[in-house]
Length: 280
Ligand code: SF4
Ligand code: SF4
Image 1 (cartoon, helix red, strand yellow):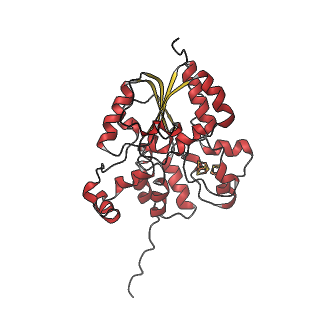
Image 2 (tube, helix red, strand yellow):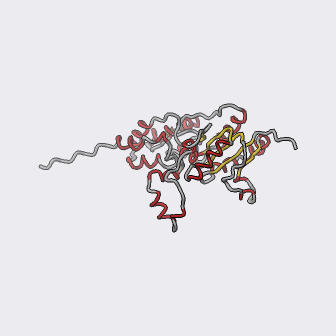
Image 3 (cartoon, protein in one colour):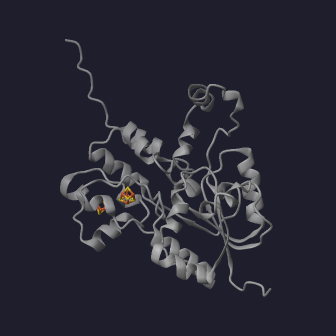
């Protein structure tokens, strides 16, 4: 049989809700033309029930031309598996907030994991998990990080097409504010004083929330070089408490290194309490 000349694509899952993998399946009109150009060599989410019983740890022999990785690293087994996947992948792209910034599960990084385990499981001793949830880039070199919770399918197709063509993906790293301007949305922060993380959040959603009168809560993660100091000051000005500011940054991208300084900045920007009156 003639060897298949198409480049091979593999899709891998770590700790996640699978939403970013489903974005690929959701490509509908574009999916069939894509499969003409790419051989989808490993993708349990789109396999038949029988194939899907292949143990996730068996990453096949590869090599794969492009691996898409969804999910964060939360167990020792994950660490071993991602190193293996890196070895058998020519290009490795992480997709989504879990894979690029630890995801919602990274909230454990700021809590007592043993206490959670004991509260949730009848036999917590059987649960083997790390104390942290970390992005893939904390463990292996990554060729490109695609942000979003979930990712945008247009951006995903651009990334796949670019890597297959051997060029850099054309994904802007500017903020959601740019997209508000492009779609003609009046700034809800300026016009209505609604707190919005748009100025420091990576573009990709088309500024969805502000278009419906709601502040961005940062599901696409940090843009390139976010000005956090100015952002935190603005959120204080718009009425957010120090606690709320820390919480809003930790929602989807808690382990994102870019957001590391937020608690300190929020504490520094706390309003000075009114001086107590001197007793007469
Ligand atoms: S509404 Fe939010 S995202 Fe849109 S321009 Fe204003 S601050 Fe930026
Ligand atoms: S939270 Fe922000 S990044 Fe997420 S969809 Fe809404 S506007 Fe877009």
